[in-house]
Length: 392
Image (cartoon, rainbow, N blue to C red; front, side, top):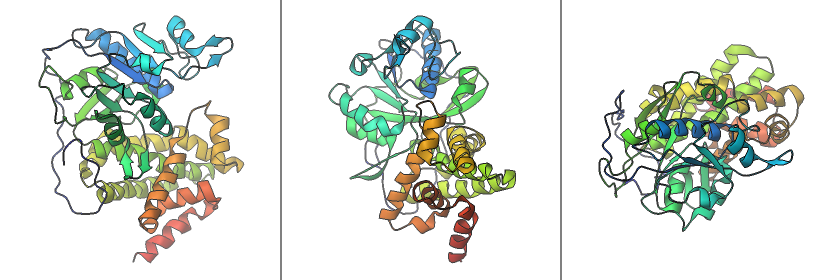
């Protein structure tokens, strides 16, 4: 399978291959072209945090990257001021990442097409339900040599079935796209508390060569910070699947937390959830590697972090305690941001229903039924147990 072919959507066995890891220390890069220009598309708390990381590195490695980083901002009024103006004058995103100082070389831009003008690397970091509209606006304005990284969590469902968001970007824009995912709660990374992440990228068929194009060394230079350690691998599918599905598991953890069932219940949910994540990957994306799910930050570490805290747990806990719907809880708690598990559990259900395989993933299906069909949270153990017994 080439880097540009569509994701396979059928079941078959596959041979496991060792994960290619980046060296712990990045080799010296001798650039044989003009420095790479980087644009971040998105300015929520995670988007702004990644933009901060990138802008610090572009300034540090100005022989590799143009120091100025553009960040596309969906502009909105904060009092009488535009959010973009606040970011560019006070160097803080007061709505989505308050009290965090941003590098002065990070420039907020409310014009999407202007923000990407001349960019060599695009970093997508928006709620994934907005990606189709963004990509549609970008079509015809992105050159084939541009490379991209998706920080989005979720899937795209369409005529091609279930698609990784990185594959969707590649198919719709004709550019090579990798992914970034890990145990990365944005406020902790923004405060420069030590953490790690995984970047996955496959060299495209039109790779221009060492020092002339984006590769693992360039990506490590772009994202690695003393407080944000980066491992670069090839398995785009594996880290994308783990990053999307862990949010569904986190909703279930929020349900049991909100009902006061404690750590034992949460551990059981995470164990079952990890199994279903791996099963989903092997069934629908056989090119993904099982090792990714337990060796990489994007796998089990991200699952643990997300199920311990974060938007999805917060929303689900609030649902359990108040009886309010997922969308009501999201609106009341998240200051305009999204709990991605709400959308992802519906996407997963719709795909599994199309394949007549909902019974193969009892936890994912239970979360969907609780969120969308008002099934009682108290029935969660029974829903899982009944389906396990049926499998015997």
